[in-house]
Length: 134
Length: 111
Image (cartoon, rainbow over all chains, first blue to last red; front, side):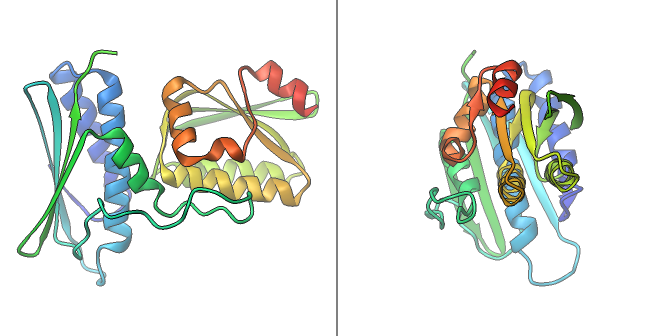
């Protein structure tokens, strides 16, 4: 599915993943983890990926094969590889703590594989989750 | 995401249902900070019925925690599922917020 680069449009992705999961009998834990990671990736793209105010399209493609759930995200934003190490360390008091980099930490922990490539003007990110019955 | 609240012995229990994500994090954070600004700065947030909380939700919770501290109040959490607990461990938010196994335990500690 393709949607516009606004936070509100991200709701469509949540529904898309839920419906895909129900259709293909994917354990809810896997689709929930994927939805959380997509929230992190897409929020980052929408918030920081563009220098203009124009409308942009982001495409999310879901597939399942050989016990793997996969999501491919393609956008025409600025080059960004989310596999790069995050920024702020996860420590400090309530007043000093920062949450920058937490999204990348979640993606790294919850997904089994993360592949990235820059193809011409597109970021192409693939998230892979091994499907395990919980 | 839905939010409901009830008072017990001077402690406000806030129950959240659904996803705390990029679209609902502001509503979640505003609900907590509005309670704190209204003088109800001892909060137990019951997360039993959340599906997950993304970094946007963690940021909102952090801002509410700061607001509570400034009011000499306290935010505690209860009823985390193992999946949600894992997210709190990854975020190292278990260092920042007390986590209780039940509402009753949380109310007793904050009263």
